[in-house]
Length: 501
Image (cartoon, rainbow, N blue to C red; front, side, top):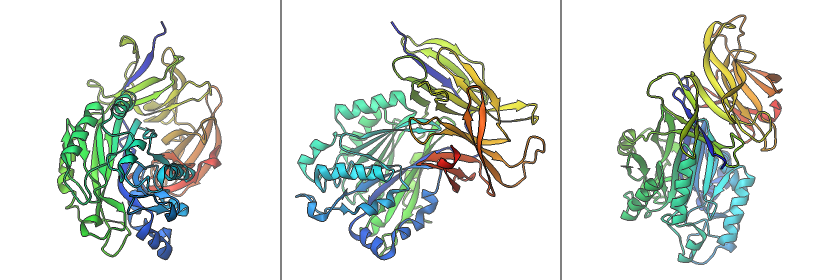
């Protein structure tokens, strides 16, 4: 019988010179009615001007989109109010990676309208979750993250047949499966009563079921006001984020929050960032008053579940996907171990000696359909006579095998990652370097150099070099762009990835 192999990487040291990659959960977003009038009078550029510091971060952004793309004439019975969305208003979704269509207004134009909205969102570079496609796995530097988008609220009883019910075996089994293959699972759910900041017994019951099934965090929306937070088995539950972009006029609906989550030293930490929309305005702004989220943030500060970083992919010749797990070592504070386990009987097949690893990225460098891993390690080199970041490439099919034994490439290295424009395209390595050299080392020299490299079978060959007059220390890649970030996590430069192939 063929053994199912899973790779387990016991890992401690993640990058400490900048913020970890974040996931930000936003509340309800409306693109019709009063917001549509705002766009017509002030233009789309006006809408996000007060929250650019939130949207311009090294983060994956998730929001709940109320309504469906189409004409008002297509509104169905019993969907009142109805929120038809103009196709060109979807341009405002550009800052978001995922929008949930699991809500009581996604069927405002019927099932055809919901499906059309999902297609249009995808055409704008945004993944839409809703109806039966309610799960998404995100690949991050902290491992794969499972997102589950659900609604417990519908405008017409018959609408329930188009959504998987949040307490159904289909949903709870899906959460459990995601938990086995990801770093953590976030349930993003439309529930509760409008304008009520307190959770119902139904909401509390669902939250417990989600956590019992394997959810690590539960994030709610629909009440249009900021809700309370609770710790359920040391898992954070935020019952309502309130509005992010909406045209409601009650004072309580003008207060909202964004939940920001990241993994720090093997724990999931989340914090609410308060926003506000001034009276007689629909444009959200950052809030200087955090009184509406203070109590919830106190709860969140003491509710940080331990997370094992995990990547699920094809790392071996096994017919099923394998799994790289990342977890804290209790004995080596600044070192990591790589171990190979047989998942059929949990027998250890391989364990490496401790290594000073900074980050990990799965990548198929040679195009054979099996993923290798890139590690950035802090290693001493006689080339620059210092401990610094070096790139390593390992294959992990039958044993740990170094394909590239560590180099900062052409110059001192700050960060690196593989990118590819499509699934079928050979990935290239993009590296962020300081502007000095190994021969003349000067860490204070201003500017940065971005270089791309291709794998040549035994090492890397340079493709393109760009000199930039900026200060950045981190890279990310999304929607065809290479983003460069400062130490506080904000974008300082955006480059077209197409220029680096």
